[in-house]
Image: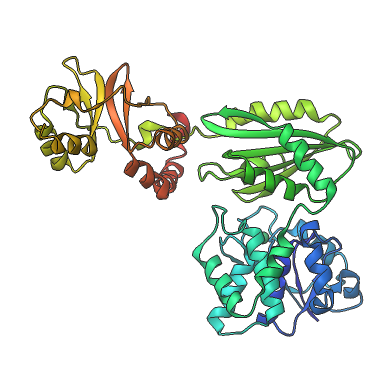
Length: 449
Ligand SMILES: [Mn+2]
């Protein structure tokens, strides 16, 4: 027989991947995990008959010739199936969106696509081969994509995720059902946990990154902790979130992380504690008698493993043009036109920044026929400025809060650069990612600077 399996504790993306894999491999039989993740329980119950999963036990006494594995590449996560297979001469083909793992299933042919959801990889293949899917399967698959992309808001979302979602909607997927399956906090317990987590949140800046943490003691394992973490991360405005749950009865510390910064590799951080996952979502379990001290240790350790956050120096323009306070508005307008900027800092004789003049200020002067008046009378005094070590996040806040398009960068009162909204957006649009590649290539120079 030939089978399709996902990882143990199947979640929505895992089930979605299996459902689409059935179209690519029609003579393969899907086998379900002993555990269904709480987020997928509703969907699983509703489609139980339609999904027609075999149990791992059904593999006993059978000869398995080939196995398709979806949404994982780690041998540990498929062990529960392998335990029931008596022969060992089967072929394995993997479709996964997780990065390579030291414990990759041996001898497997691996198809790895870095899409937000793994379901997307199988969907792309169906689109390529012109295979149509039924409305139930389209609904199941779409729920998988919504779940793993955080409703298309996670940083790992690709245009292929949208493409396959569009294909699935075209195939009759029901968004009403998808949204029903996605409501994560349906249990009273989860909602009360959500509130306790919110009340225990701590905020700190580590290496310039805005990190949020929480520590909660639980009597025993509680279903849906991940969904609670997801929800907290969604409503709070942190860059990195590490949620710690100490499970007294099992003597273990569960660490669940969420991250939305490209510069931080959450899976690598979790790997330090024996866990794994993606850059954006990862977790680890530490066996320990007392959770608190480890919590403190890990927080301290983050100082060492987080790379410094990007600052003004990384994104500013340093050959900044300034205007003298006694120049006329007319001269200033020519100068701005020449450099095609919409504003510039104004300096005095000692080259101290005393104001900021924008095109809008010049327009005011023009309207009242004052183009030969000095800049000084029309500029904004005491403009908002930042320092070379102001982080990009703080820059974002300053620009947003004061609704400004330019941020002069001062060092000891002297102008050393300017960050424009354009610089900022450019940076956001992936300059950061390119730089990282460079840093990786030169052995993470960034860390030493
Ligand atoms: Mn997945």
